[in-house]
Amino acid sequence: MMNTVTVRILVFLLSLFILVTVCSQISMQFQDKYVTETAVLYNSAEKVSFQGVYARNESVVRGGSSGVLSYPNADGSKIANGSVIAYVYKSENDIYVNHRIEQLKEEVSLLESAQNPGITEVAQPTFISSLIDNEYQNIAILIAENDLETLAKERGQFQTLMDIYHIVINEETDFNAAIADLNSQIADLERQRREPIDVITSESTGYFISHTDGYETSISLDNIGNITADRIKEIIASPEKEVSSYDVGKMVDGYEWKMAGIIDPNSADFKVGSSITVKFSSTPDTVTAVIDDIIETDDPNESVIIISCDELTFSLVQRRVERVELILNDYEGIRVPREAIRFNKDNEKGVYILLGQRISFKKIAPVYECDEYILSQISSDSSYVSIYDDIITEGEISADLYIDETETGTDETAPDEEDDVTDDTESETETSPESSTETEQEHTDDSSSEDGGSDDADDGDIWEE
Image 1 (cartoon, rainbow, N blue to C red):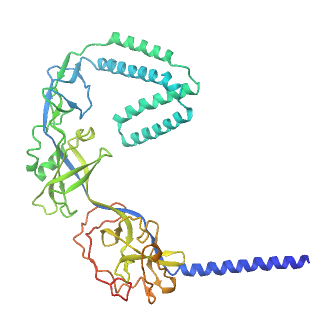
Image 2 (tube, one colour; image 1 turned 135 degrees about the vertical axis):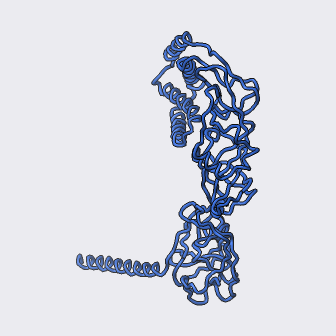
Image 3 (tube, one colour; image 1 turned 90 degrees about the vertical axis):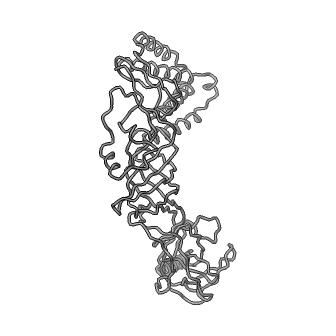
């Protein structure tokens, strides 16, 4: 009896092993029939980078006293007529004393806020801990972006949260002793404080920059349109000239600025009046600008481009010359290999998708086309290609493997006979415009074109002709 049971178990296991092996071999043979490419989200854009020269309407501010300057406002701040631009002190120590007093007063304010009973009595440790984690992430991002101005503000919030947490978990009862010590340090520094020997005020309203470069009177919004390629190269080679020791800074009349640079006219399809996105080497921020002019030069590979913008930030007033990247026609969609594109019997453009051991036809909605691929619009409609679909690029499609998708909104007809996806004798005909030889593209693609037309497919053939 024992031997019979053992034999039956062994026979069952052996049969199961053989069945799994056979199914695996069949599945592998089926999979080997097709070459697929996973549909992924993709970006495509025309880009060109160059070193540009800033032009702003600027006027130099000069002082009458020699000494060390202290600026109460950050660069790019709006200054009203008659407002203080700078203080002049005899020594740097005078500036340090004033700065240290302000720092210690801020510390006192943070500690007083942290021990406020209205906050500490109702705050929960887990909630404060989550806020601390979020603030830590924000600080890490700001450090990576080198955003020191915002970092100073976030640092204060982070310290306050840490102080509140120490009180909530009973690690501290209050900060009265620390506050008293800080106030004592402030009192000592107050006795060392010296008044400035001069105060410089603004004679007009504008946006202040605490340094000059010698080009303030020679480059302006009015004359930047006349700049030559040689002049641009000259400024790039020497972005700062000798300036007067009495220069305090400069005032910028308004937010508007322009930039002139040299580009290869064949690198991208830039046109006057086009709106573009501008990226800068000095900051992660981007702005939207307009192409004012493209001026031909004697060199067929060089043109002077003039762009204008009305967004002014701290980073955009720190230099005269900066490397920028202009981005035109930025498209996003699902990447579909061009060789996989076919037409069904309803003359709808799409691709075949591998679903396990079955095949389905899904439509595409092109938003951008180039020689290697098409970007299809992202859609919630299941009849259109979706992210992570396995798109068939090579292999024969037979009727017995085809899925009729009428249940999901499409009405596809199975192929009448087997067809070969890799047959290159019949392919889609596209009309492609000129493409740039130096156009940069996100990911790895280096070419671009406009949407092209396609020939109609015959009613009896699902393949593209």
